Image 1 (cartoon, one colour):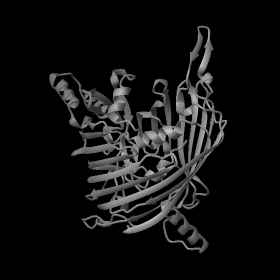
Image 2 (cartoon, one colour; image 1 turned 30 degrees about the vertical axis):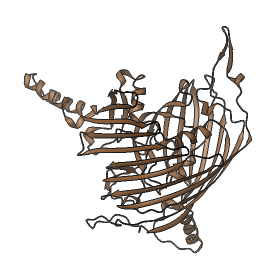
Image 3 (cartoon, rainbow, N blue to C red; image 1 turned 120 degrees about the vertical axis):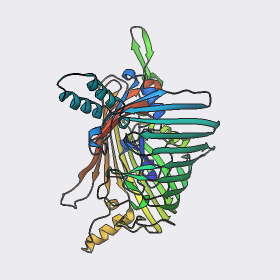
Image 4 (cartoon, rainbow, N blue to C red; image 1 turned 180 degrees about the vertical axis):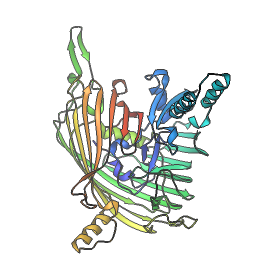
Length: 506
């Protein structure tokens, strides 16, 4: 089932998107923009934990990734590895290293091609390329369990081809029915819906989120502060998103979720028993989240209301809070054909911070209102065939979700069309988006997956819906983890790709 929380989280500053641009493997989605792809959401496991696990299955524990850099000679290909991870009962420390071989190979090749005779000086010149600091990046991450319900995480990373460090501190506390998160990052990396990166010098947030109750009610409160002028990383001639400008923001969001199965074939214990020559064997599904065939139709109706008092911006955490696991376990355990609807709204108020850069340059063509209110909606339909237990042809799944990111923007656009008004560019939030997810079993635990997003808009000289973004991936489900998988994905739009470990995701 597509994650309905994406629609709600996209309005906040804590929605992590998988990205190989950082050693912790994620960047924050710019809040208030069109919802990202389902497959783009970052793993709930920390990158250090992922590398510790993935290193057991890769040669020499080296994991590849692809990420374009501002320096073309650096190339996109890189190799990551976890050097060491000492741990005690309540503390651990991990050191991540990254190496970019493209520049090294091209530099050595250029030196060799101009050499007529090999001399000692030639070997010295070649050896210098191996100690070029721009080829290496290092990240240090540590976590300390203060109490059984509280933990502190500190991380820092340094990229050899860039100035400065990325630092992050996070304090997480779990209550009976809530999660409290305090986080600070300097700088913080954000990514917009077009795949462009922005760097905010300072990002601080405090967030309180409830678990999803049996009645379906869930709410969130958060305070966020952005400091300093956002700097574009690969956004050329793009205006700065107003949500990233300096200021202080307080937000509150409320949602109501409800689901109903019209028809579903429940999994029984005998379905996991396989008769063999040696006797009956227990063979569960490769992923318990996909263990029931879609010979079922289920519906979810979600009413969500968000009150966002944006006194600037709200940045949050992507750790492993119980609210994440609770939501994932509640819904992803049951494959189905599903109809889902999400209704919601929010209001926001901004205090502090300027609309433009402090140097007087243009930051955004849109004026950031100190107070605003809006509604959003989402409807989803899911179809699944197979139990994902056999070696071949036992899983086919399609998820389709229609997103309306801003009811006010959509209403304004419809009003303009009816009155034959045309005032420049359309708000990107005014056009509905259709997200499609297709999954097909290839062999055994290997599944091919495609995530795509279509813009339902006929403007810009393009008639009808057109493809806005897509990613494709190979997933290797790990039966021993019940609902865990190794995901190797690639985004043609961003020209990025990486290998991740994901847990309890549909």
